[in-house]
Structure formats: structure tokens, C-alpha cells
Image 1 (cartoon, rainbow, N blue to C red):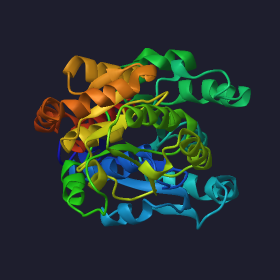
Image 2 (cartoon, rainbow, N blue to C red):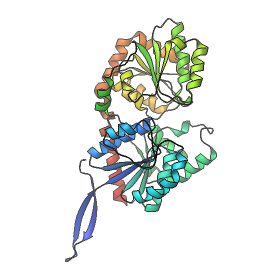
Image 3 (tube, one colour):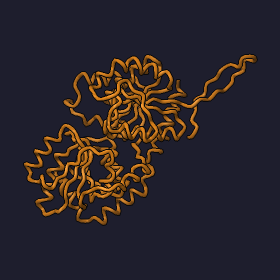
Image 4 (spheres, helix red, strand yellow):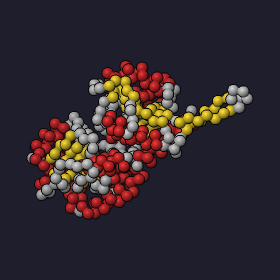
Length: 388
């Protein structure tokens, strides 16, 4: 796929023959910011992998802010941006509406990097400049309650997504759920999330100052991630005599409530809230088990990353993509939320068997590499360019 090109024909000046000129396909990923998040991290590594495939991939931010800006630069990505520094995304929209369309003219396609917010930013620029816009769907939206999206949000999604040149779901379930937004089947694509294996393995060797073994949770402290479930399950484990600690890596609006819940359960001395960390892999590599208690997921990078590092995973069965991967591959435990403690206890009691499954995944994880993901995206961009 290296050297991927688009073809343009120009008449030769004297004889009028058609002369083939080839130039690299260029795509611009659009994000609101680079705050710590799975989709944001996925796309900066995807941009780097696309460049290795010969695609001219770049990044635009409404606000140049977030913990992942440094990681993007480490990968050789210097983002374009409308506004530098913290603040509300809305405050950067006036400059974005002026800068992004001018920038978009230098590209063949725009990629709305997360969901509705970035689609609302990228789509107008694409429509004005007649550039293809590709959306990403990172979750199975059939699982959304009406309360998750306001009526305005639902109306905007149903207006914008059917007009995009393509929408990529990170799992078959996420792609199929685009029925809800009336996206044509011919414009739906499924491309699995990928992980940058060399990158995470090199950073997993960094030291930590935590006694092992421990149960681990990683992610944004948000109700949808289900860390309240994990605290309840861990309290059950402690009652049964388990000696492990619980380590939670991440930050977010639910942190205060989780601290209160830990206190109510009497487990505060055994729970360590690390906060946001740009290197969660060093915690994954040493954990006895990673718990994924989410109420809704697409294809979570944290699950793939943990398994790639040889760490067993126990996940709740709420999300179809998680169920499909763990049930069909037998690489992790999938349990109802009400028996999460039992699932964790089983892994902790049979660590050798759980580690064997995790190591099997680590050996086969190449199919989930970021380079494999980049190849699929490169094919998609080429097909869109062919249709224009």
C-alpha cells in the first residue's frame, strides 16, 4: 500500500494527449482537542501509520490542548489548530469556521475523528469545499438511551451522518447501529481499532511504585465506564478474603462520587486512584487482571492493549463488540455486571490459565495492529477518491 496515489489527467500542451500525473492522497483528521481518550489516541497513531502507508495524513484541532499533544509530537505530528490553550470548544468555533475550509482545500478528504461534535465541525468545511468527509462511530448507538442524546443532538446526527461520504464503525455492531441514523449500507464500513504494539510495549517497561498483585481499571471516570460497578465488585472480593488492591488509572467528572462510594463500602485503604497517566501500559503490564465494567463500549483500546501485554481481562457483557471478541476467541472472561466479583475471583484463583489465554492473544494480536487498521483506511480513502 506504500505510495498510495490518486490519478489526475491533464492534456499535454502541444499534442493534446492525456498525461497521467500522480499525487499522494491527502487526508485531514479533525478533532476538538487532544484530551486523554481512546479515540484521540487511536487517531494520532493512525495518522502516523497512514503516513507509513504513503497517505498524506495530518491533524486539525479546534483547540490545541490536551495531554496527548505531546504524544502526537513524539510521533512526528504537529497539529494545525484554530485556538491554542484551554477553554470551551465553542470558543474556538469562530476561528475554526474561517481556518478549516481554507485548510481543507489542500486535502482530498476530512475525517471527523470522534463523533457528533467533530462531525458538526468537519462536515460544513467539507461541504463548502466539496471534499469528502468520513465519520467514525466508536460505539454501538442502539445501546443509547433517549436520555443520552438530546433531541437536538439526535436531529443533528440524523441530518449529518447520511450526508457523509462514509462512516466507519469500529466493530460490526457499531456499523450495523448506523441504521438508527439512516446511513446507507453502501456508505458503512467496519474497520477494527488498532494498537501501536511497539509503542505500548516499549512504554510498558517503565517502573511503577505499587505493590503487586492488583486489580486494575483504566479509563475516563464517567458513569458509562462503570467504575461504580468495579468498586462494588472489589468490595465483595475483599469480603471473601482477597488480598489484592484495586488501582484505577484515569480522571473525570465521576471521581468525587467514586471516592464517596469507596468510603461507603469501607474499601478506601485498598483502592488507589492514580489519576490520568499518559503511560497506562506500565500499570497494565503488571496487573493481575484488568476489569472492564463499562455499560457501553465500541471496541475498547484498553482491552486490546491489556491482552497484547499478556494481562487477563474480565469484562461485563453489556457491549456487543466486547462480547463478540472475548466469547469467540476465549481470550478473556465475559460476565454479567452482577457477578463481576465472581469473574475477577475466578481469574485471580486460576492465574496460570488466564495468563495462558492472554499470552495466546499477545501472539495473535498482529491482526489488531495499527498498521493493519491503516491499510484498511487507506483502501477506504482510495475508493472514495475513485468515486469522485
